[in-house]
Image (spheres, rainbow, N blue to C red):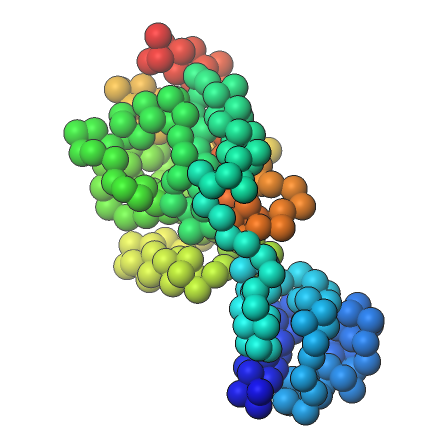
Length: 266
């Protein structure tokens, strides 16, 4: 048990550092004492399963990482991680399918927390097909890599130098619990370390036109298309994958894009 206590103590310190929370504040929010929190972190106290969950909740730890905390303390995980096509997530799958369908003819996709595309509607299938032509759509299709790494999608993104900084910032802002998981963190780090991206991020960009959102402008079939997106997540999830998935729906930013897209889809 000494090893598991040491592991839970280290993870607890890590999440306190992530949340910039003192032992006192954590203790108050979790309904315990600073002395007890200190004892857990140093291995002098063995937290109960219920206490691990209370501490994790007080630190707003994502569900996947709450399972890690439980394992580190010597307990079995309590949060399931079902796939979208499992019977347990059938209601979520039906809701996502309805949202994808009702957003036609405009593009909409479902992604996991690593920005890998899990589901698309017909509009998104058309968009990806046009952007990647003549190359096939990769499996899995990772949105960050498609836009930032050299390739046909990046070549069709207008004002790429404005899109990339906003996209990388968004990747961190929209991470589950506001913290990138190790895999996504590694992906973002590698993308930021690309020479052209490093140079771009180090160079102040001229301000874009006043707008409530940052559009992504694309060149498709010699036509400029401008979209902004709305992101939806599952409310009050108690399953790991249900918490991590999100649906991104793209809307025309102007009437010209709306008309051009209807022309492409009819």
